[in-house]
Image (cartoon, rainbow, N blue to C red; front, top):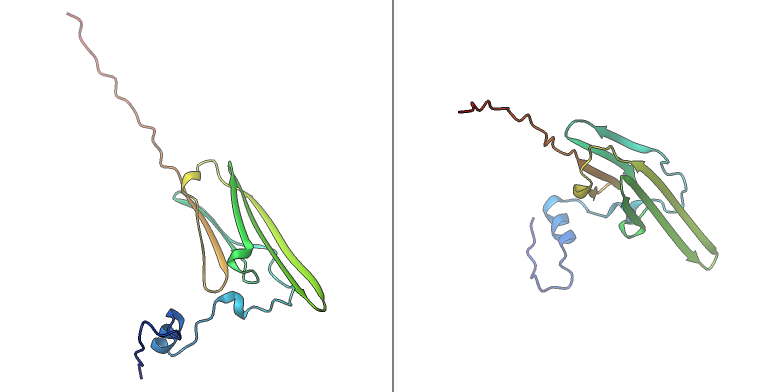
Length: 143
């Protein structure tokens, strides 16, 4: 049964509406992760390098989006994550850094990133279009 709530109600959020519509609970991936576990993937996931794009996927499910940083310096793509937690029992910090050299034909001005609900970071750069073309030579008769 769908329950309609006032858009001005404090308890109405997009998550609550989605939960009611789908019958399931939507929780951001980082809230569900075991942040006490240090067993996270050290490998870069799927890499695609074809005629139309270069893309790379990294599992960052143990990091909140605000703990991540992506920088592009020339063709050097750097992905970093840092997470710190303090408690009465101590302090812990986890971090990672990945560096990838983008292909020469990657369009560096069009690099984009997105993160999925399960914590997969996707970074993609389309390939530059080939702007070279043949110029025909016309014969001009001299009078």
